[in-house]
Length: 224
Image 1 (tube, one colour):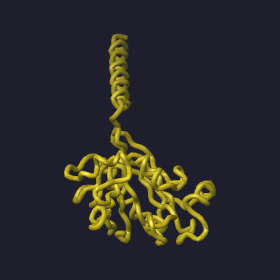
Image 2 (cartoon, helix red, strand yellow):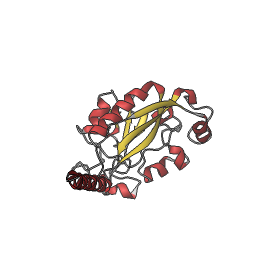
Image 3 (cartoon, rainbow, N blue to C red):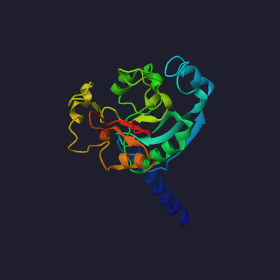
Image 4 (cartoon, rainbow, N blue to C red):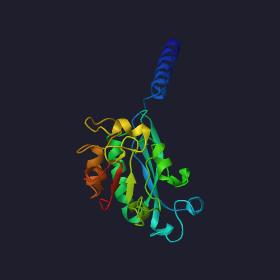
């Protein structure tokens, strides 16, 4: 009988430690390490209905059957993990997952990652939300030439932290501080950092290397 109080005390200590551990894991800005996971799936009926007439329409250079939705874990700016989605061409889906795996391992933060249909396929609104996105059946701005996004072979990453810069200016107020690239801050794509290396590993080009303008958010299989 003398062993019962001791066992009860030990059990109480174990429970206390478990509760303390849970409290630490739930502290804002912290997250317990986890393993990266991702899935690649065809465009289902619900997503097809959401995209049709918004980010995709008849006449687009690729059909919905050519696209895949990637659902993947990523780190947020608050240090917590989230599950986001990207829509890409089926031919590059596995490569994009490889990039996301490397970014997850580097704990690179992504603000949010959802299809542009949530913003009525408005590139401007998606950027304002600092949304990382891929497929969008649209032209290169100011032209009648299909963007690489229209093929599902381009990704815009953290577009507020990585703005499109022309003549030293950006169209998004929140991006103004990020026009200065002399210091590589969290969420930024910079020469030689984890982001640029991850895309270079799959043979994709970066708009940050362009000469006439700089599109720091833009990565694509063609480099344009």
